[in-house]
Length: 161
Image (tube, rainbow, N blue to C red; front, top):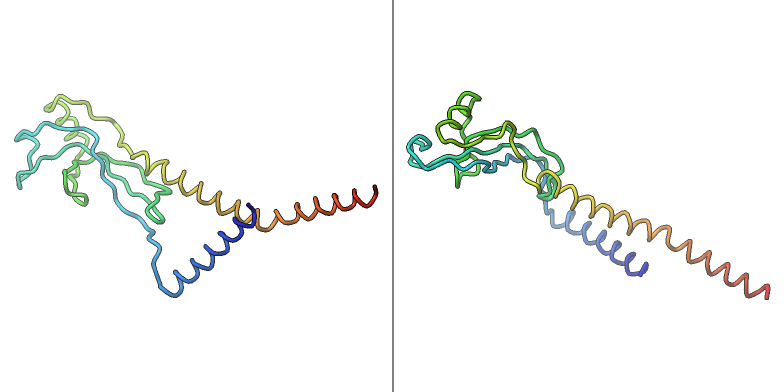
């Protein structure tokens, strides 16, 4: 099993060196804005935009990611969520939010939300990948010494008998 792990780690290392140096495939990382829907507002004239679309209440935050896995995010803020438009939102003040809540007869949370995957899921996946890589490195470097010690102890025991 340790031999297979060592072969896999070495082949992945060689393959990654080839892919990233020869093929110049970029690793996606950086920051991106995310907007999720929190409260559904009724589709009435009060909540309709000039172009005819309706807005709801959403949460906007910025995530930092590597290979599309979020490892941190900013504090969410409550905004107007426009369905179908990922990059557009409405800036809403506290007074406007209070007015919208009374007109729509809905409860708007005091704080914004962050999706589970952006808050915890990406960290779990990145942690598991890191643990697998560290285990492969550990077993390839330190696993051989234990086997050699066991063989030495076994051969010493047979010589004394």
